[in-house]
Image (cartoon, rainbow, N blue to C red; front, side, top):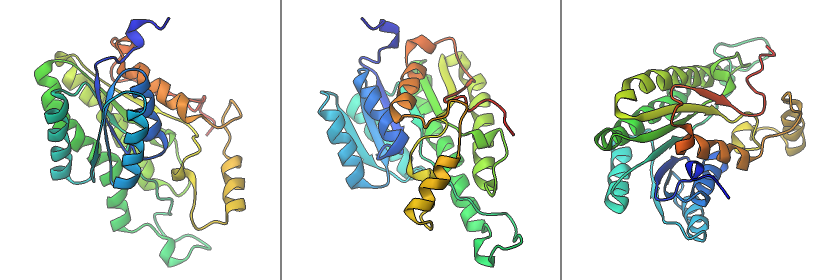
Length: 266
């Protein structure tokens, strides 16, 4: 028998970036745990597939195609969630992109390989500003109901250096500080704000489309963790369920890591 504190029965969760990868896994496993889901992502067809799989579990799923870097679209998505379910208990800020380019031209690098201002802004808009937009829009409702769980998806690069990863690292470091600051700001309203870093997961964000498949796989395999294996998407989803449940009520402003990724090997 599962302890009731770990269940999400009757809860409503918004998950961004829910059309694939970690976001899809989190949405699906939260539905398994009893939650109804509002799935947000830019690709409508993939989003509908997520919704279809969740509905097969007997849960409700509202699929809302959304560009979370656009405040107006975020507010519209949240309005639809409230109209459908009447409340929002959980927000998972999962939408994110990585773009590995050097900040300046280095030896052996072509001029076109240098990070541009447009690319810098795109990474920060997706990984940081979108989370702020979602927290603002959802936070108004959580503050009124004086309860809520916010889960921001971080990365090891937010605390450790990463090669040619300055934009991604800065966005995740800022998201970490945002998590801790918001946790303190929203404590009086019984809203828990935490971050989870999923470690190495076999998702598209780790793949370089410019590399041949075999070379891509070789480079992926070269990225090791202390446990010596890739993380499973289901494991990331289970941690998210814990952070969304009553079992984590005494946690806020925390950063929880999977895969031993918090061990400093740098």
